[in-house]
Length: 252
Image (cartoon, rainbow, N blue to C red; front, top):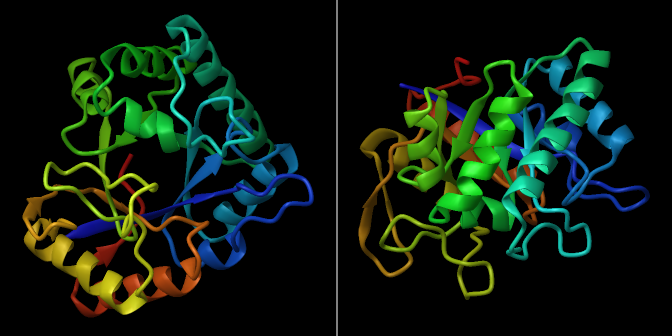
């Protein structure tokens, strides 16, 4: 089995440092680079893309709501046309910075509240996909298995990447436990690593309430801003290697 290991990176902004991108890029195989709306800035994005290329890591555009103050974690009722245009804008900005480093942006992963909103919200999911299609270059779409956005993407002939989460708890229906609820974010590196190996080898995880949840995943995310993220990512990578699971960038 081949599994991609991704992380949300490039989220520093000005003098505010977020995570250890350089260390994470020595572990993961794809990087979801912030495009400046929920986090990140031009210099951070370009540096992150440059480091990703040095380590053979695939690059994706991590698009989100225009919400620097809330780190993109507040759901917003954005007009569909505006959301489409802002998706194009974010992809275009990252693509230009990546091109300056000779790097291709190969997929798009929505961030935070937008990611969770388009699991069910068809209007916003369609708006985001309209932006991805308009941006061109045959970009793949990364999202939650079974989500409306991936269903619509597949119907439109777009390549999809089904994503699971190493450091987030699941509900019994396969959605993520909201960050506002206790136990939503996991921190025990060894327990997380064992959980990811189980996901890779059995296709299921255990929900916060104890149910077994089937998850078909092409990629697993370790959030770059989770405390101890590098330790967690290394534990996951080592555990997958020992289990005979090949960790490699998505074939897009």
